Image (cartoon, rainbow, N blue to C red; front, side):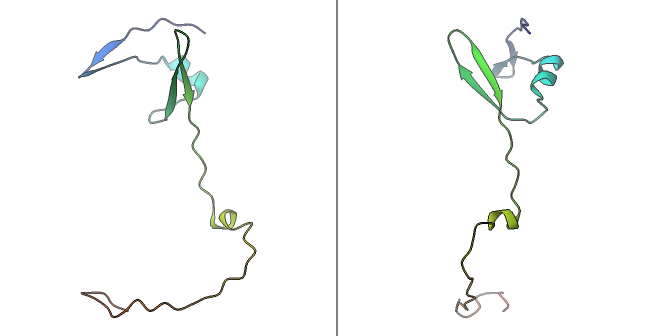
Length: 83
């Protein structure tokens, strides 16, 4: 798909508006993050995929060591701290 776009002034900046069809093709939505790369006389836009947050089980899936609970002396309460 090829489309001619015009660079327009937005406040103190300049920008282009991406047509709805291009947003649909690239599966882009408001507030998505994109990577822009300069090439041989061209610009390349690439959607940056959000990484899914891992659950606690996923984070510790390969952790095989025993956990030894230990008590730490943090000192006396200071100010309005309550223990």
